[in-house]
Image 1: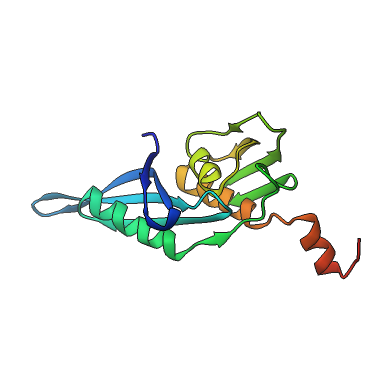
Image 2 (image 1 turned 135 degrees about the vertical axis):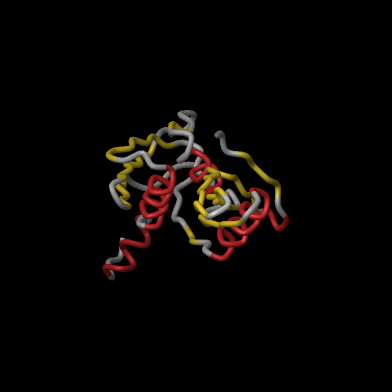
Length: 162
């Protein structure tokens, strides 16, 4: 299922990365419930990934959107790309993000692309290794983005003047 974008207030946008159906077998048959994975961002360096469960799809998406807003993180960007190459790991999924020249675009799979676009990245190359599970791949991407540091941040952390 392709990601859907929703225009939100305060410049925030949300994109549904995936909807999952689970079933509980009971005496009278099966009880279905739905889970949604939603990415939310402002295209200016803020990104959140949320997960919600409910009996109906719209309610699950709403819960996931609220969760994504609650879990916002700040990502260090350099223009329209990332400052350096980085690897993110979560579970059996690994993802490599490589900075690209202006005009390259977001070269990413359909689960990773919405996260990168919502954080404000316009030019980047990606490669997924290991498991390509939607949830783990998105979480690995978030881990990779959180570990980005600009040159100034590294200099400041080391106490070096440049």
